Image (cartoon, rainbow, N blue to C red; front, side, top):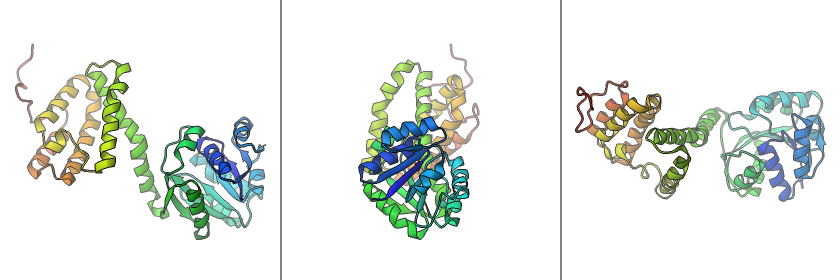
Length: 307
């Protein structure tokens, strides 16, 4: 089985090393920014640790550079400058935003270059081991390196698709929305619930079933059919009441609520549950600056002080 070197002993690098070693690959060595980090990973991978990445590369047929994105290019250049790459190797990075061009120093030494990125979130090595198998991966790089990428994905029981270098920024933006921005949207919900008076230690517990139920609906029905709620129904008065309450109690959250609401109008339109008139009214409401809404919540007078 092929010899694999890991350069960058973080969550993804260590996790991939563990997964591949369990599937018969030989882990030839590991290197990291600090020797302590390399030794911790090496203890888990049952392989030697090295202070210099070029030694790991020389010992390996497959070289994973799983450092931070900003370090991939400099590390590849340093290894190439010290004679660590050669023909017959495949050098792989797992960045979602960078193309294989960042590995050009390896190409210039005769190695093949490949970007292999999992659509998955891995906060530590154990999460990587749990989450990476069965994931969808993007592959981009040298044509001769693609069969190895396909083999690695198949060994992880995943799926893959070939992406062009030009498409990687949009691909990575989509991944950020699905993972990073989803966390932010849920945080927005948490903060609004706390502004409504719920104790902070209850918020996650209270909203978890709703979040999980929504995801279940998306998996079962897809987008946009899973969309429910006042925008999907064209309920202008309810959205106006949200904005009035936010203006009074959580004004710092109103801008993002408006922006997400405007986007949701389009989702509701694709679902077919929102007619053009209601969509226009909602768009006007959500586009207005705070405190200038032309809509009233039924039963409330905007000019009369409430006791």
